Length: 269
Image 1 (cartoon, rainbow, N blue to C red):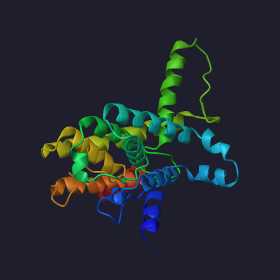
Image 2 (tube, helix red, strand yellow; image 1 turned 180 degrees about the horizontal axis):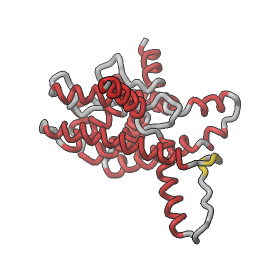
Image 3 (tube, rainbow, N blue to C red; image 1 turned 30 degrees about the vertical axis):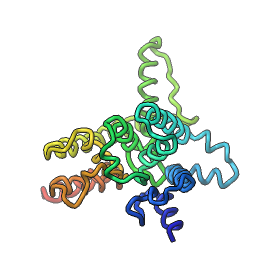
Image 4 (cartoon, rainbow, N blue to C red; image 1 turned 180 degrees about the vertical axis):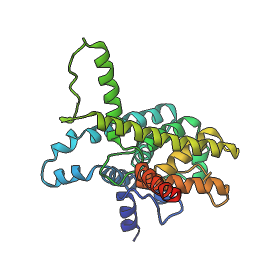
């Protein structure tokens, strides 16, 4: 019963558990490692899964989002191990949990609340980035982050190149047009804007800046990791904002904006 529940919740990057201490309740490094693998599978694009099932295993490692995920997990894990004194397994576990927007944990909330600001910021960044588009993860999605980084590189290259030079813009062999870059930029702006609004409101209630950012990033990314702010005793306005953050984070912001515009047009008539 425990095995099937934990498999379902981590494979779907849901993160909810039948144990109060989540995966930490089992005190098993093997179960922790298996959970990491399940979260990575859940955060990987279904198209990549399809290619793997068709026998094209090497295509998994050629996928730009999978490559970006490996790099981020490796870099963030090293940062947590070196500067936050996390154990190797716990560092990888929490980075994957935050990046995949699963929210599984091995430590109680009280322990996470006592963390220094450094690991909270690292994990908050991971929760904002998210994993692959085409998976069950939330947040910005890796393809948007990669597109924005690449577009910045292309723009710098255009500036320093002779006038009239043609800059080839491709990601994984596919051409990237202005439409894709604008979509990535506008969505990222809106995503960070809504995080900023809830972040400021939460700090107005007296919560710490880093803890507030952590909680808002977790809510809008549909993650579920918490330092203790999210609770039945939190202020009503903050709770309503978190409901809104979770909603727009799940359906993505653009459909929500289209809905609001439609409602506004109806009310104006």
